[in-house]
Image (cartoon, rainbow, N blue to C red; front, side, top):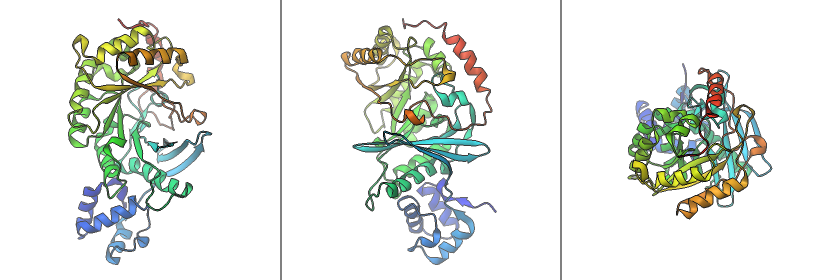
Length: 380
C-alpha cells in the first residue's frame, strides 16, 4: 500500500485526513505544526500526539522529502538545490539571502510548456506538473536545512519570502499550486505574509482571475514586450491571451491583491526589446492608451542571463539604465534586478534541471529563433 504523503495537504486537507482516521481537528493542527514549523518527519518524535495517532500514521502516512541530487553555493551566498522528482526528471530551487530577507525561488513543474525564448527551462521542454507535496517539499527542506546551517534561534525563520519563479508556469499547475500557497501562508505552517509570497506568470488570464478569488498573493507578470507582435515571439502564450486581455486581468486582480500594484518582469534583450521606442510604448501601454486599461504597476528590469541555445544577447548596462530612466521619468517605479547566483547557473532564466521532454521543445525553439529575427526591433 502506498503511504499518504502529508506534504500534499494544506491544513484543511490534513484535517479531513485526520477525520478519516477518527481524529479531531486539534490533532491535525498539532501534526501540521510538527511537520512545517519544526520540520519533523518522524512520527515517534511528535511527543504531544496521542500514541494511537502516531501508530496510525506510522502504518499509513509519511512526510516525503525530495531526494537531493546536488547542492551548489555561490560566492554571493546564493544556494541552489537540484531535487530528484523521479522518472529522470529533476527540478531546481534557489535560496537568495539579503540583508533584510531570505527568498526562496520554487519550481512548480518539471520543465515548462510555455517556451519563452529567453528562458533555459523552456528550451528543456516539459515533462509533468509537480504535486503539492513536491512544491512544498522544496520549502520544507530549505527552511529547516538553513535553520541548522545558519544556526538560527528557535522560531527564527530562514526564509521570509517565497517566489514561484522557478521551473514551470505555476498557473498551469493550479490545482497543486493553491494548497501549496495555503500551507506557506498558514500561521500553523510557515506563516508567510501574502505580500511576501509571489506567483509569477507568463499570463494565463483565466487562472489569474481564479487566483484572485481563491488565494490572492503578490502577482508578477512576465511581460517582456510592449506590443503583441513582439510578445507573440518572445512569450508564445501571448497568442492565446494577448496583451489587452492580460492587462484587464491584472487590473481585476488588484481588487483583492495584498499589494496595490502588479509587478511586470521585463527581460532586457539586446536589440530586441530594449530601445527607447520600446520604453515609450511600455509607458503608453500601462498608462491606458491605445485601448488597454491603466494598470498600477512597477517594473523589474532583468538583465538577460545568456545560455548557448538562446541566440540572444544581454542588453548593455547603458541601455538598461537608459530604459529604466525612461520609465522612471514617466512616473513608473522601476528597479533593475541585481544578478545573483550566475556563477552556479542560479540566476533568473537559467534554471534548467533535468527534463524528460514530451513536447519537442528544442525543434520549436529553433524555429522561433529563426522567426524572431524578422520582427521589427522597435515598437510602433
